[in-house]
Length: 284
Image 1: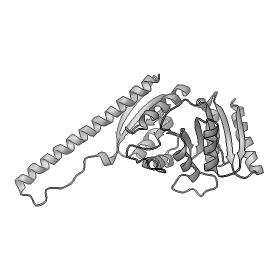
Image 2: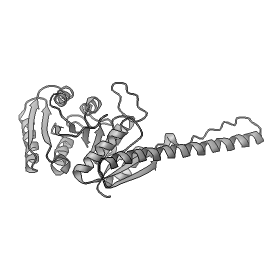
Image 3: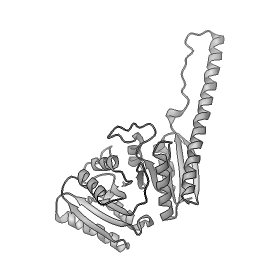
Image 4: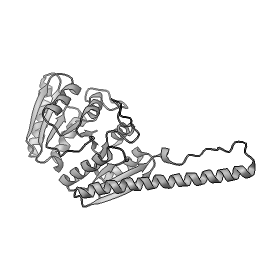
């Protein structure tokens, strides 16, 4: 498959939702789904010399036993990874997706994304990973790294999946926001959905022109989009619109227009991903 949805599953509480989101996207776009589980380097057998000053014969036996334990642990880790992929495949298959592939990888998840994303229409990941605690404000440690590295849209799955009918586009006039509008206009994923493009900030001629330009692009693609300019702080106002208007998906640029690009994704983006109970599509 050269046009597929890549879903990264790790066995966390978000894995089922990742699969369901990937299947929904596949159903609307005609793409297949590839499920990938990455065995991180931290899961590789650790090499410790525990022999100390033990005499030669006993030391040899100890090292042999440690080696056997490492092999057993490696087998268990691989078996668990295959089980995670089997469970994920069952979910996607149950949602009616015809083309499904699975892949068990070793190494770093960001390196994996870099190697496989050229074949993908989009990447689907969970908001938090298996190792994340659920303290308020905590996002998965790999999420930011994936967003920074990926060149394809990254769909951050919410805790529970629900079919999407209304889409909110957070538009600040920046390059990634304009790219998001262009992506919506070209993707069959958004056909027939209700789309609202919102700019939060001062009521200026530039802001209104930006919204008009975004609407023109969407109108030309046959998508009936409404626009709104809202005063206030983006994090607060966008979140309230999501709740008040029953928005099912947020699309936004990963980096803000007015910020110097740094090693972290924009603060509005981080807050929306953290607080939103709906999936967030991030565009670089």
